[in-house]
Length: 356
Length: 259
Ligand code: HEM
Ligand code: FES
Image (cartoon, each protein chain N blue to C red):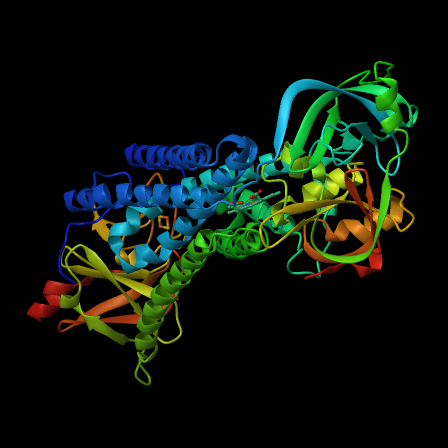
């Protein structure tokens, strides 16, 4: 959380995560390179530089596919949340691997000539109107710039300074980068490669990424549609949003009322509280979180808020919207008008109502 | 929702069931990635059998500056009086200025040989790599007097415009779409443009490309007429002739089209 900015906040999980990422990258590059050296030998050996360029390229592209799958996977199955926890390191690592790929490409394919390599990258192929001759490397360049922008702004410092919505929008560019890279491959290597394997794998990757997003998106839409039928009865501000007993103790759930923001409900210590579902950090789904040490704990990176007033416990200073809530019988009712972030709301007592 | 204590917070100890899940999921992911790496690596194209002999070599013969820098050396094969070796410089540079002053003389050139099939080039060594020489026998000098030219008429060919330096072993692979920008740079840097065709049996034929007058392609003709088509699959028309062992195609630039 945001008390001063340490360059990166470390803990045991992040270290294990990063070790897996680094180890995976080294192993992948090693396997690709060694296989290339072992299978293409003698006069038919592939240049070491080109093998390295391809190993790095396919590694970065594979990592990008994994990154794009983590989000929807974590929404569909909470057990994938740990992969989301430190996803930004995976993103930065992807940028660095892609950068190494681009550096070799620029040095080897655009160097040694009578033109500056960076100028050559932009000028040696200008067949923008031909598909088969298209300058696919410029697509890679734009994708690399996006990955750079994302890696450079990945720290919470930028999240705070740009504001969560702008930051989120910036990081949505990853889908454009992905599209550019699919074309970088399709209009580049796939124009000459005789074996169908790479083309098939890229296709499978695109299908998996798209399908996971569709399924996760559809689930949320269905949830919201159910909510959109909820609305206050005429002349009343309270909306019935479900039964207390549908929420496990120390847990949350999510509802949508009308066209409003999603609302997170929490049941803890005989109380019910309601806050926005949107975490102040990166918009994680608080309703899928848990009450730990009396605080709502975000499932994504563990930011915490007190359920009664939507404020992070000191020394932190984050605030989220709260909602008025009451319990009638065993039913929960909320007033769907969000209160200003950090507004204290008396939690609804479950037992009291029961005994009344 | 049933109560489970499976809740992951990065800075707290993970629940055991989650640790077990991740304990197989993450290694499986890495193993799958390694399998993909191996599969993609083994499905790369064969880069061809071009080879760059890195040991220093010398050739003695008659040097020519037109249409492109080359040296004609006495042939060892009975079919031809002379064999042709193209001369290029280091990196993506042609041999141009380095042979111009000695055009037509018998010289000794020093450098390294690149070869693929019948296509041979010599990359001139640093410094004084082209020097006048008188070690050839009178008979050999006579055989190199003038190239034997045979006109072969109009042809239409399908294949790829290459930079012969990379194609013959400077880069493996040095052909096709991924090599397009590099080949463009090589040719604009003075490496002679060549054309390769592959017949049904997989045999490659090489053609040196010149303008319709048999001179080097340069300037606008090169940059606007030829370079946009480098490394693409194209059809090309021109007038073919054989000079000693070399096939030279005088290209009608307007005829080039992508297939
Ligand atoms: C300035 C930026 C870039 C340049 C100049 C560039 C250049 C190239 C070149 C020349 C190739 C063909 C290599 C060959 O097979 O001979 C290639 C292939 C490829 N690039 Fe890039 N690239 C850039 C950015 C990226 C980025 C950001 C990625 C991200 C993951 C990427 C992924 C790939 C992939 C997956 C391939 C196909 C691999 C293969 O050749 O087997 N490239 N790129
Ligand atoms: S989104 Fe990061 S902690 Fe909530």
